[in-house]
Image (cartoon, rainbow, N blue to C red; front, side, top):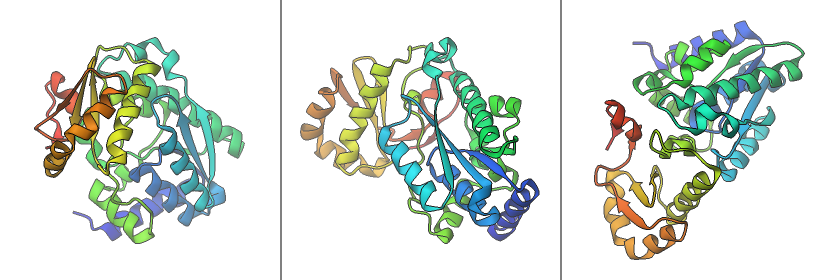
Length: 276
């Protein structure tokens, strides 16, 4: 198994071969590392970060992502992605992410060509551990010629966090994020109203000091997943937090005793979630 130093050298080689790169940027730990490392390797003038703005991304996440990239001297293009106008996305099938990613990849190519005057290397922040979950978006990326440089260099999530710490990237230990649509069961239509409701409910938990959680949307029920170690504290705060979450539009507030699991909505597909 290659060391972190060897993987870092492999990533640097991939970037230097490209000379210029446009990166699908979310502000998450993975894509943040790729943007920062690319700027350090190629110079920020040769890096473009493209951030998709939609109802699936909270405004606070967008603002934090833009601020971080600008701190690194990297140009940011915020482009509105219109997945809410795509019927195949809104009906929320198991391959929902394919349609969203296809929209984002198209925007990435357009913004990259506009910025550089040609289409440079197009990349996203997927790393090697992402292969362990259901990722329909990878098919859209392959079709669009978008490469996953971290995965190609052998980076795991642990590697990403380790190198992020070395580079002084704020939020290196931040829990993985996912778009708000991932909280909605397959087959339940995605609407702007529901996405806003989920965002408001999660903000209640965020303001209470919780991290690495999800509010899963089941119609009138908010199913809360927090790390197992946080369940006692959440239970102790139930009398305070439940009314606030109900105020966002839910009738019932339920605590999932299995705790937070990445990809728990994929259980209906026979895919085991990670975590708990």
